[in-house]
Amino acid sequence: MTDVLIAGAGPTGLLLAGDLARAGVAVTVLERRAETSNLTRAFAVHARTLELLDMRGAADELLRTGTRVAGLRLFGRTAVDLSRLPGRYPFVLVTPQYETERVLRDRALAAGARIETGVEVTGLRQDADEVVLHVRDDGGTGVRRAAYAVGADGVRSAVRSALGLPFPGRSAVRSVMLADVRLRDAPEDVLTFGSTGDAFAFIAPFGDGWYRVIAWNRARQLPDSEPVDVAELRETVRAAHGTDHGIGEPRWTSRFHSDERQVPRYRVGRVLLAGDAAHVHSPAGGQGMNVGLGDAANLGWRLAAVLRGGVPDTLLDGYHAERHPVGRAVLRGSGALLRGALLRPAPLRAARDVLLRAVAAAPPVGDRVARAVSGIGVDYPAPRDAHPLTGRRAPDVPLTGGTRLFEALRDGRFVLAAPEANPVLAALVERDFADRVRHAVADGRTRTTVLVRPDGHIAWAADDPAPATAHDALAAWTGADHPAPARGAG
Image 1 (cartoon, rainbow, N blue to C red):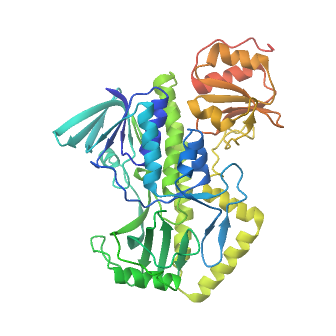
Image 2: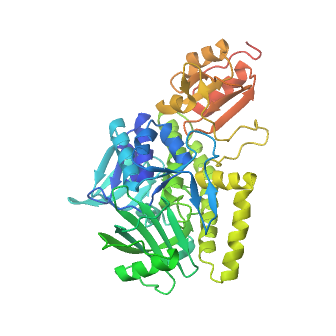
C-alpha cells in the first residue's frame, strides 16, 4: 500500500506528487491517458506560480520555454500592469501547458514518484484506516490502496463523482472553439484578445510558429461534438479583431464549453480534491491552472506532515479553510471579466472601457488588481491575536551567505528566518527541529522573526521572541514533541 494515490497527471497532480516524494512520502499518480498529451488550454504562468516553482528549483527551466509579458490586455486599450509586482517575476510567462507538465513530471519522477498511465479510476471506498480506489486498465479491473487519495482528475473528476459530492454552478459560455493554426500576419502583442459582445477571440503563441486560437461567436452556439469549420473560425476572429491574421488550415480543432463551478468541500475523510476537480472558472485572466498549482502547494506539505511528521490529521482541514475561499474569489473574478467581455450594447462597452482605464490608471487600485490576477496577493486568514504578518505571502528576502528565502525552502522544510544571528534560536532548531525546520538569518532590514511554511506563507511571526515562545510555535506547526526550554530562558 502506498501512502498517497493521486488521480490525474496534470499540472496539479504532478506538482503535488513531486512535493510528496521530496518529503519521503510514497506516492503514485494514476493517469487515465495512456500517452502524454501535447494539447493545451493553459498558457499563462502567473507570478505566484513562478515563485512556487522557484521554491522547488524548477522556475528557471520553465522560463527558458516561454515569453515574458509585463501586462495583460483586458478590453480595448485597458491593460493590467504587472511590471510593478513585488518579487523576481513581475510578468506573466506565456508557455504551453505541456511545457509546465514536462517540468513538473521530470521533477516528480526524479524525486521518486510513481506515475501509472492508462489507469482509469472507476470508484472508491474508504474507512478509518485507508482509501481503496477501484481502477480499470489494459489488464482489467483492480484496486489500489493508500492512506490518503487526492482527486486531481479534472472537471469530470471520477474521484469527486465517487464521493457523491455536488458540483454546483453553471455554464459560463458555450461552444468555444479551439484551434492550432499558423498565421500569415502575427499579432503585435504576444497575447492578443479582442471582443465585440457578439464574439471574442484570444490568440497565444506556442513559440514554434503555431498559435492557439480560442474563439466564440454568439450566433454559432453548437454542441461540443460539432466540428470547427475554418471559415467559422476566421469569421469569428475577424469580428473580434478586425482581421483574421491570415489563419491557415488548422492542425487540430475542438469545441468545448466553460463552466463556473466549485465543490462545497475539498476534503471528505481521507480523500481530498484539488485543481479542476474542486473548482472550474472561465478562462478570463488565465488563472485556472495557476489556482490548481496553488492548491497542490498548500496540500503537499500538510499531507507530508501528517504522514511523516506525526502531526494530527486535523492539519488537513486547513487546506479547505484556506483554498476554498481562493477558488471562490477566482471564480467570481474571472466570471466578472468574462461577462464584461460579452457586454452587447455599444454604450455599455464604451462605459466599461472608460471605467476600467480609470481603474488601471490609479496605481493603488491597478496594483491591487495585478496582485489578485497574478496570485501574489493571496494571503490566508490568521487568528485574531496573531502577528500581522501571519498568513501573508513571505517575500523572497536575501539571507546571509548569498542565498534567498525561496532557495532555502527547496528541501521542503519550514524556514525560521531571524532578523539577526541568534545563537539561542539556532541551537533550539538544531537540537529539536533540524529535520523539519531550517534556521536562517535575513540579510536585510527587519525586526521580525518569521516561520515560513513550505508553501511560502508565514505560519508564525514575532518581534524578538523568547525561546520558549519560538519552541511552542515550531512544535505546533511541525509536530515535533520535545520539551520546551524554561520560560524566560535566553
